[in-house]
Image (cartoon, rainbow, N blue to C red; front, side, top):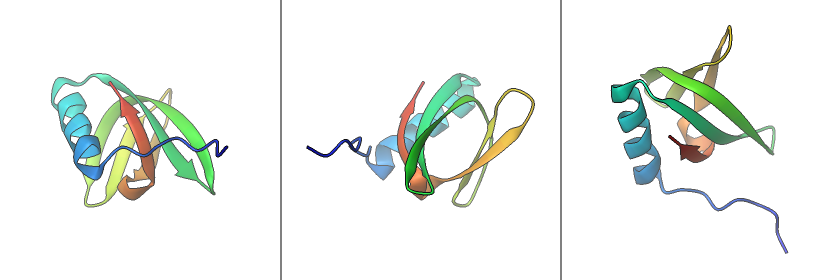
Length: 73
């Protein structure tokens, strides 16, 4: 059995990002980094074309929207 998480649709991801950003809510994002799933927790700092910026503890992480697997608010 494959151990890969099912991806959310692009429409669901964009909706959750807009919701969390407009209300400044913390998010947990699962995304692909070098073919591995990585989890990032923090607040959305900004969006630029196809990049999402997450403010974590002390630094800002840049994530490509197409690499996002799941987002939880």
